Image (tube, rainbow, N blue to C red; front, top):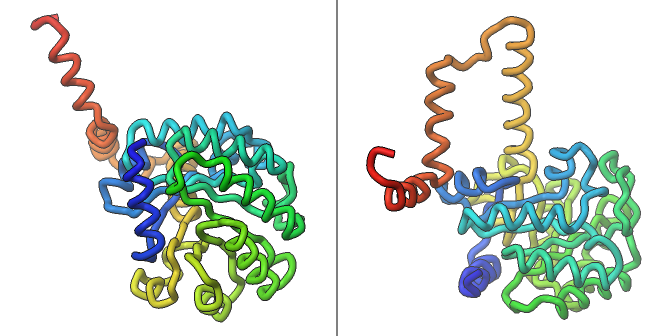
Length: 287
């Protein structure tokens, strides 16, 4: 990756928030997000874990890095990758950073749940590591990155599992350990407004864009607003509805002509024209 791409993303996070970063599970979606002018894409463990029907708790670093590399191979969209708990202790975190940086991530998110991560976090049963354990993992991540502009985001689950004040204290410690930004999931509008005011660096949140307008997010002072929910649920809901209708003998809800029109348009979104150019240049006329 061109180092300038990461440097520009870091600069924007630090100075131009809020950057709006939607769910981005694959290269095709990344190219769509790029076409629409989004600030970046979010490759989340939750979405990948659901796609494989195994939970993000059971993902491997190889699976995550391969998914990130596939996105970056075909898109210049800045990519925030959910590194979960870093797949283990501080040594494993170092390996996680090596792999995801090499795969082309612009930013890596690491969270303070226990490792190995537990499947029950999906049903909101979470267990946090002590602050000093997480700060050790952050320091390992900082030491492992080769590009100093690779953004490291430290996420805490302390709002839900300890208290809002405890979460802020953890975030301050994570900044001191070398995190470039922090992420916390607030529980009410008051906490959402207060967190950026009380913390000394860029703050990210994980929620639906629809909660506020971009102007309101800017007024709140967030550097990154990441939406892992809207795209994922919209896509699955549309698929489920169409398949349910067809399975019961009804039309899918989209005309056949419209469906094929969308299908044909995917080749342009996927960038096949450059592949066609190669064939045109290397294939004999008439073959």
